[in-house]
Image 1 (tube, protein in one colour):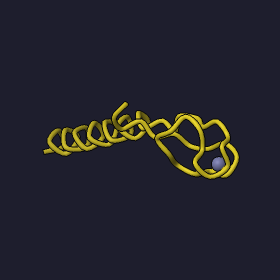
Image 2 (cartoon, protein in one colour):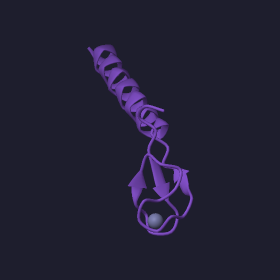
Image 3 (cartoon, rainbow, N blue to C red):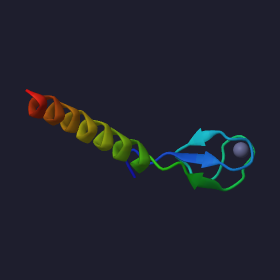
Image 4 (cartoon, helix red, strand yellow):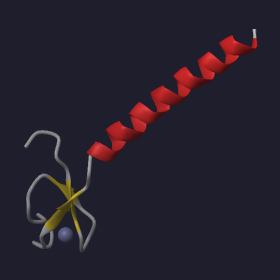
Length: 57
Ligand SMILES: [Zn+2]
């Protein structure tokens, strides 16, 4: 359960619990996986740009 962040659908509070500590409503996964995916795409893009520069010379 490490690094899994949940978000309350009612008040938007971030928590690691399956229920909001503030209002007690069930929480949803905030999706930390999306961030790592974006990071990968950024790295991939940088590599692509470098290759393009190399081709022009
Ligand atoms: Zn809440």
